[in-house]
Every structure is written in C-alpha cells, then in structure tokens.
Amino acid sequence: MDCLFCAIVRGEIPSNKIYEDDVCYAFLDINPQAPVHALVVPKEHIPSANEVQEAQAATVAHIFTVLPTIARTLGLTNGYRIVSNVGEDGCQSVKHLHFHILGGKKLSEQMS
Ligand code: AMP
Ligand code: ZN
Image 1: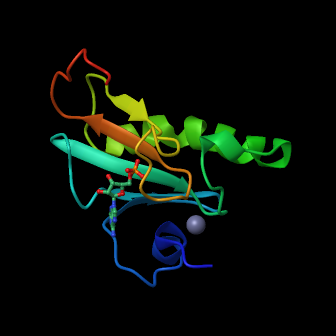
Image 2: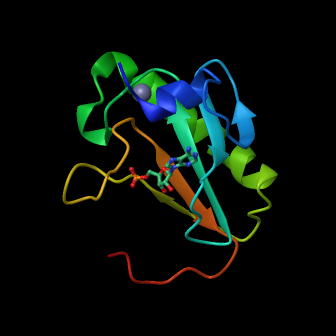
C-alpha cells in the first residue's frame, strides 16, 4: 500500500519527530499553518476518522491520552486546536488518519 504517513512511521521518509510510542507517531507538519503545527498519526493504517473500527477505538483513545504530553513538548502552554480533516469536503489530502495540532498564537475563531 502506497501511504505517505505509513512510510513516515516506518522511517522510509524523513520527518521531524516529536513523540513516538508503540501506538502512535507525532511529527512537525511540512507546511505549517500556524506557528506550531504538528501531526499525530496512529502507526496502524486507518484511512480517516470516518473509518475507525471498534477494534481501533483504543488506538484513537490512546492518542488523546498522549496529546497533552505532545502539546507540552511543543510548548503549547496556553491551549491549542486539534483538527482532523475527512474526505473530499473536509480537504483530507493524506488518506491516513491524522490529528493536526495547531497553536503558538491565538487562533482564529473561524473554523471554516
Ligand atoms: P490533510 O490535508 O488534513 O490530509 O493534512 C495533511 C498534512 O500533511 C498537510 O498539512 C501537509 O502539509 C502535511 N504533510 C504532507 N506531506 C508531509 C511530510 N512529508 N511531512 C510532514 N507533513 C506532511
Ligand atoms: Zn497509512
């Protein structure tokens, strides 16, 4: 399967790693849209938030338990935004579930 984020997780494509454990991998976004912009992905290939199976629920829950550690590592002491784009209308460009972590400034109240 030709998946960019699977290749990053395997170390075949370089990335700026922030955090890694058995379940997930976090790295800096190559095209930051905020002063701090990172991505957290499950190591397991899940196409999007629209396709999470019951057996993968613990993986997604785990990501949310380590988000505070990742945010702290990024210096996000005053809050941040978590975004997961889904499908065509959601402008998802990489078909491997990922959570954007955006921060480092007061973000826009506009979500779309
Ligand atoms: P999305 O549009 O929600 O699917 O987000 C995909 C994100 O992956 C975008 O913000 C891209 O800038 C980012 N991205 C694409 N290729 C890479 C890469 N090689 N390393 C880090 N981030 C990447
Ligand atoms: Zn993948």
